[in-house]
Amino acid sequence: MDDAESMQPQDATPPAGDTMNRMARISTGLVVGAILLAMFGVMSDAWAVQEETETVELFGTEITTNVSQETGLDDFSATICVNGECETMNDDLSSAYDNCTSLASDFDYNSSETEEMCGDLGKTASAGFTGMVLISIGILVMLATLVTSFMEFRGRMIPYSQYYPFSGAGFVLLGVVAWYAMLPESDASLGYSAWMAIASIISAAAAGGYSMYNGEDGQLSLNNGRIPGIGVRALTAESEAREFVLRENAMGTKSTSLVEQGKVLRLVYAKLDNEDVVTEDHFIVQKAALTGFTHYRYDWLDNGKYMWWLMSVVGIISLFISPAIGSSLLLIG
Image (cartoon, rainbow, N blue to C red; front, side, top):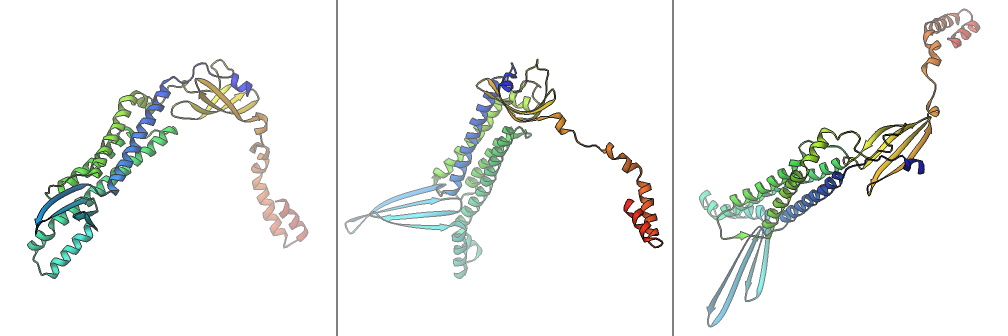
């Protein structure tokens, strides 16, 4: 370890690597936040909320009725309270629409009457389904963004990966707009679920914008190949040994190299720790130990193969004349 640590490069990775690492962490955190917000928004049911309160006097007694309704992408709930006594009803939008059309069919309603009775429910169900599909695609794109970020940490660059967060935000935005545009006209207002989806759009777009604004130069340098020699190395430029880099992370802060030093081969792991290079030998072997037999030792077998074949054929034929001689020639062949 002392010999390994003494062979350290004088010029290690520049501080830009720390900047890129910090930028990647911030961008990844924003994408994770966008995914969570979009998922919670899809799973909750307060996309469109509406509440009405009415107080009437009947036989000298005031009766207060409060009706609140929350509509999600795939189901809805309605709560009716009369003088503080509440009852809640939950149902799936698609099932409610099917039940409504079945009821209209039982009453022998024509198409226009059925549309008047169940049309708003059908439009709400279609709007929710469209929004859910588009937002789910956006979530998948943002998950792909996390995968590409992990692969870039491992040193493999993905083309146009800086635009993936914008694609995810675009699909979520398209889902919210499509859902709102397909809803039937009503006095409902946006609930917290819709606002969570909007916050997801902002977070994903901020992740993409932050990466492009702060990491444009670094991204270009990584895509085009980093200038040789600025990553962490186990040897100095003055060392007479030869170093062959086998693997290196994208930031240039860690590398695995094969070092040829005289009659010894060393597998060395080097990393940057607080601007100091720390090296560790994982494997050391004498080069002579890797020298094995070569095909030149057996060339006489290959060059004389026709003679061996001839002796084998003669031996097989001789078996019928003289089994002893034939067996000997066959074994030699």
